[in-house]
Amino acid sequence: MMEFFAGMEPLLRTFWFIALPASLIFIVQTIMTFAGTDATDGVDADFSGDLADGEAPFQLFSLRNLINFLLGFGWAGISFYNSIGSKAILVIASALVGLAFVAVFFLIIRQIQKFGEDNTFNINHTLHQTGTVYIPIPENKMGIGKIQVSVKGSVQEINAVTNHERLATGTPVKVVQIESNNLVLVEKI
Image (cartoon, rainbow, N blue to C red; front, side):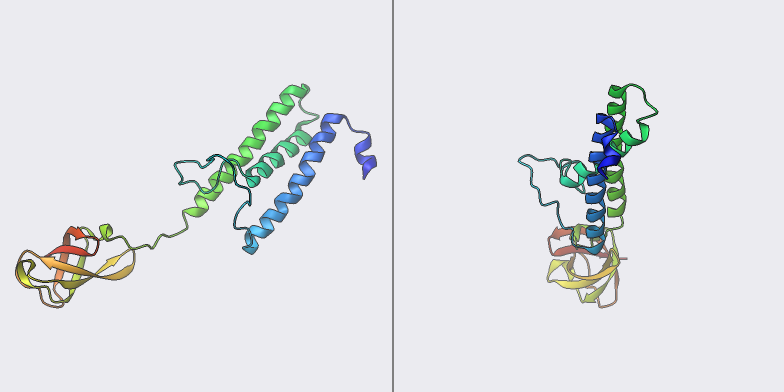
């Protein structure tokens, strides 16, 4: 194996010494990710590298991104070594490919996260939704009843009041206002 590297120019050898370990670590990370054992990078930075105000799927400065950069950098250097005559341009082009690997990884993770579903109930999602009275609602806010309304594909029971006449069980209603974090104002449809 060392004979393979012995006759190489130092820059090409450097690209190989970057590409091979980065590839091995990348393969291990990928296997761990699909096996479900890859929860975090295990490296905490002393600064915030989060992108997009904390809505990013990963930190900018992480072991995974370093490996992605080195993977692109190393293999681009090997691939373009005989094509690009200037060593400085070769290193710059390889660095750009490494950055492109990080960007592509970011975009792939962003697209995958779109498949995720947030089913956390938020009463604000009931505004202007229709539902039916489950427990009769007394007239003119004289008491609290309950309605059933579908929010994000899930039926929720919510406390409700009305400003009008009493609403019997089964009456179709529309949520017109959020009164508090567990009470809505409804009107008969």
